[in-house]
Length: 119
Image (cartoon, rainbow, N blue to C red; front, side, top):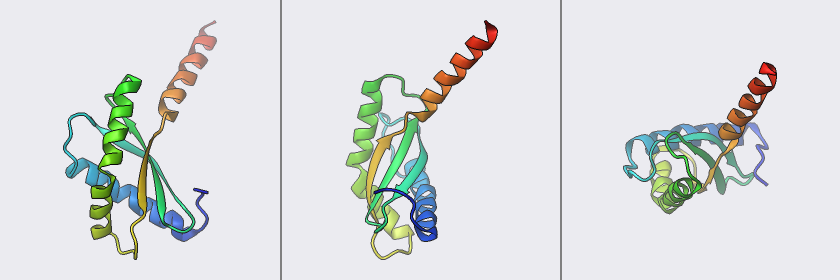
């Protein structure tokens, strides 16, 4: 459902990525979030929904990560409002924030590879 279907959806996903990154950096001031980094955006074919995949630089435990994602999800209406004011599209998509664990999994794979090379 959330695959990039056309050049237009890719352009809008890239624009959402840029704008939401700026919004999180400058407009959302919550200590519990820490430093969020957007790793990707997937927009639905009808442009009504957008999955925003985030990682957190200074969050370690699953409770901290779940809390940060929940705070972002609660702020999604405000972020959507700011996004609608900065983008030139008819309707701003509904934002769904999801944690992207691929960086942690990639680091684990790299550490496994480095330990097997030492053997």
